[in-house]
Length: 85
Image 1 (cartoon, one colour):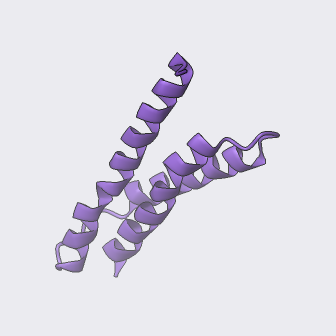
Image 2: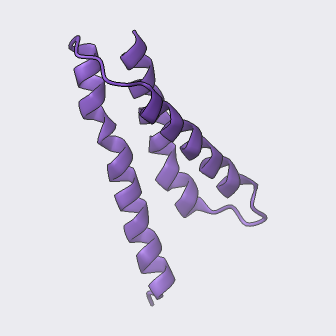
Image 3: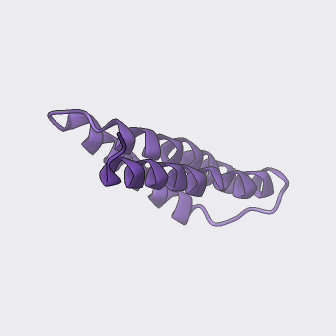
């Protein structure tokens, strides 16, 4: 049985992951000598890390929130670091 909350949560998780994975384009630009701004992906990675931490410290871990934001930490940091290299 699917609840509305579960369906919306799953869709939001996928959308969030796609948003963060889209940093791959910026990472490739940075590595090809066309640096992009580091500030937006850096701030996004901090935001994602805070959401991961929040999902982790809740009395009942919020795995949907954690899984949705881990790519933001990873790809946001990679995009930020490659922008300043």
